[in-house]
Length: 280
Image 1 (cartoon, rainbow, N blue to C red):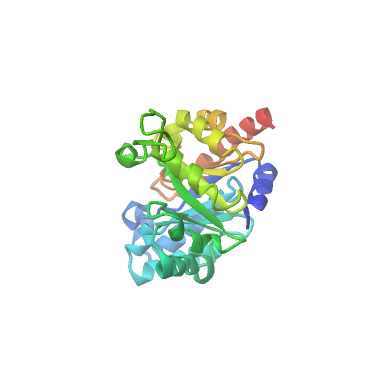
Image 2 (spheres, rainbow, N blue to C red):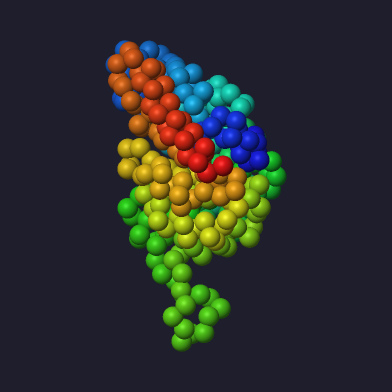
């Protein structure tokens, strides 16, 4: 699925919800933990419970890599269980150069046929180009993340490289990164991660990249506000894919976990439907 298809699915399903499958064995309902295929069975149950209310699933690869070879098998099996009507994301945050980046791109676009993968831009253009070589896939670049420590680097003020040395002209580093990366690929190929807890800054980011989709984590447990995200991040194609993980998949730790996940996803979808009805 490409971003143009995702935009259509958002309108059709009246939802811009992405469900994050950040699954940990120790957090599963007790009755599942002793099952031989506990994580995969849980993922399938969550997908079944939420697919009517979302348009995307995001698998944070760290939770699967931590299980070794078995975890990679679970990751692949989960990916193949996601309906092809839903946008699939490998949240891998890879960032390396040359042949290494090429192999990462091959991993997540060919061997594991995800629709999209998250990447870190710190090493520059040649660390991202191999992903953009896949014309019908989506590269999601970290922009302004929702964690507090984003202030360590992402929010540093930097001088404009072409400004007069005596000038005070400067931008935040994340603004420079987003502005620069947007020149490497079209809105059909690129998305940017913008945290929901940075909703006010999102307005400025939207002015820099008016036509690009944002992947927005941080709504739910992390405290981001959905209406603020919509107010500051909206564009003509909606342009938002809002991720919720723990608030949905761990909504209940009993045998009723599926029903609880359904109810929580439905709440998000209803709120999104109301926002869509006002803005479209």
